[in-house]
Amino acid sequence: MKKLLSALFLLALSSSLAMATVPDPTKCTVTPNLNGGVIIAPGLLNGTTLSINVRNSSNNPIASAAVSVIFNNQIRICTTAVHTASTDVNGNCTVQLRGGGCLNAPTPGACVVIANGIEIKNYTLVKSPDNANHTTSIPSGSVSTVDLPYFADEFKGVVAAGCHNYDNDLDVDTADLPYFGDAFKAALSCVLVP
Image (cartoon, rainbow, N blue to C red; front, side):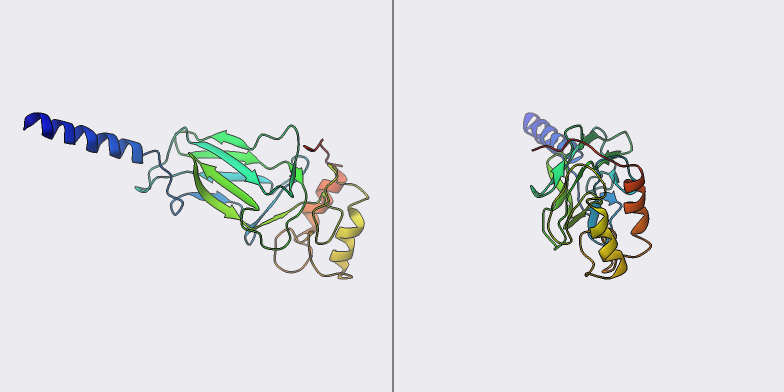
C-alpha cells in the first residue's frame, strides 16, 4: 500500500510540475495590440516590438518558455529577422517584428504568438509602411517613394483607409503618420525571404 501511495504522490507531483510550464493564454499578455493587429517593418520602428509575458494557469510566470511569432504567408519576413525568444525568470521576452506586407481584412492567423507550443495570441491584422497597395500585400523590403503615394492617398482620404491604417481605427490620420514618416525618413530596408 505504501508503494502505491508513493507512486500516486510522485505521479501527482510530476503532473503539477509539467503543468507549471504549460502557458494559459488567458493569463499571458502580448502588447501592443492595435485593435487586433500588429505592425511589421523592414527595420527598427516604434511599435514593432512585441512585449510578451508568459504565465501558467496558476498565474505564475514561466521562465525559459520558448516563444515564436509566425505570420501568414502573405507577410514577407526579413532574412535577418529573429522571431523567436526565450522568457526570463519573470516570464518576459521581446520580439522585434521585421518584414513587410499587409493583411487588411481580418484574417485569423495573420500573426500568431506561440509559447511552449501553445497559441497565446492570434492577431487578425498585420500592417506595414512597406506596402505598395491599399488592400493587397505588396512589400518590396524597403519603405520608399514606391510606398509613399499609397500612404498619402489614404491619409488625404482620396481612398478608403486600408493597409496604411496602422492602428486599425478605420481612418488614416495623425496617429498613423509617425509610423510611416519615421520608416520613410529612415529609409528602412531589408532583404525579404522569397
